[in-house]
Length: 309
Image: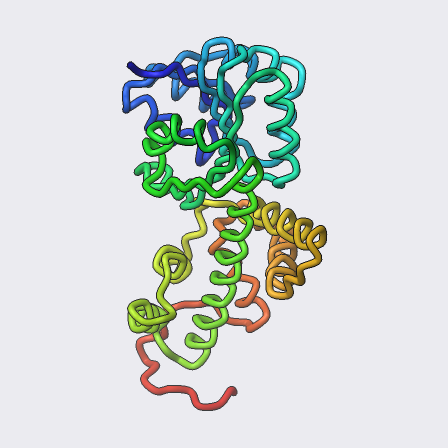
């Protein structure tokens, strides 16, 4: 028997995630502050609602997929929010990437009303949201996780219980540190190769099968080489995640020197109006400093440049 599911937040990630639930045969109630996503999902068979409260009233399980902690607090705890419409015994799964402290605050508010809660941020960007192969990191009660695992597997190929409420988002922060630093390192490598007169696509193909190979390299290097910065995951959202990582690091007294440097690069890009670029666009900060874009060499280039001009 299918569960009645509500979905709040129909942006770049939320829309395809919600579609995968519909495809699996679940009844779906949806809401977003932007009407475009609601209309699209309603046309595919979902029930449109006028508020987060309305979604909760229609649902046994409510999923939120929102940009940041304040958005989650407003949608869940605010007027016409989820907790105004949720029944005791229902479940809220917040799949947003937020500060773990905010996740714990929301989780406690849910517990006070008899609503179960999981924090379950995702990784993989729009392509994996579309094909249902996201990595999902889940914090919360193990029994609730086990019960909802089949639903989470409709959106992700890797679904891992990481600990109590807040652990999902702490794990996501670790993920985002690694991704951001990988993109920046990839940018340095490809800019250097380009400056030396090499074809960055050849360099990419040469190193992707070795120790430097990674999912980040495979996904982002072709985008940079093609100059395609259409967002699968926006720079401004990665900035938010690194900000939360640095706040957590301050609380736990852990130095994050590389994360701090990359956060500085991202802030410079946001000041240039590139906040809505895909996060592969972190590379453009390296390009600007070097005065060269990652690109295939001109046909006339046939030698390695040993020294700078």
